[in-house]
Image 1 (cartoon, helix red, strand yellow):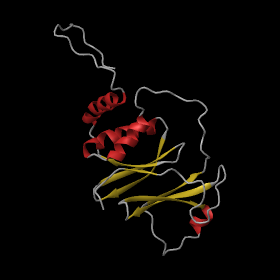
Image 2 (tube, rainbow, N blue to C red):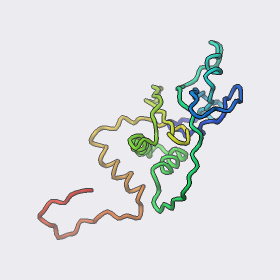
Image 3 (cartoon, rainbow, N blue to C red):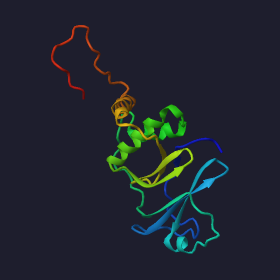
Image 4 (tube, rainbow, N blue to C red):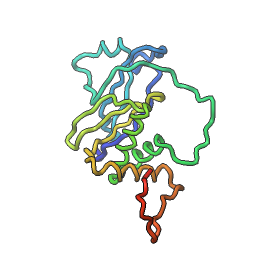
Length: 188
């Protein structure tokens, strides 16, 4: 199994993985993540409440699971043109690349999207490599697993600046002039 602590997992299904019955708007259902030996990651399966309740003790045990409410996909009526990379696509890109040096950035982006109520933390699991936080995208149902790097308070501000630079690569930060002004400058 490859050593990875962050994964991007497919969106929610629109039907039960057991009965193949379509979910209705507002219907409660269960999402479960199972270890996938083929990919070394996780496999997402969505179950109707009836299918979930009919699972027996011999069934494979999920790594994580949660109950949620089905919402049909929202169709975007407007097309937005974005010059700067948005936090969602940046997080997805960093998770897919899975480079160790982006671990803190991935976590900051996930927390940022959680605060904007775009991602919902559905679970957290302790593993031998640390704490994994499991997020579900509020609208698409995509699942993101991000390692919590246990960032100290002193590391947060520099990481936020790094994330801001990644989101706005064309914006240049003001360079300090050799002639210093005596008044303190405010950081934005």
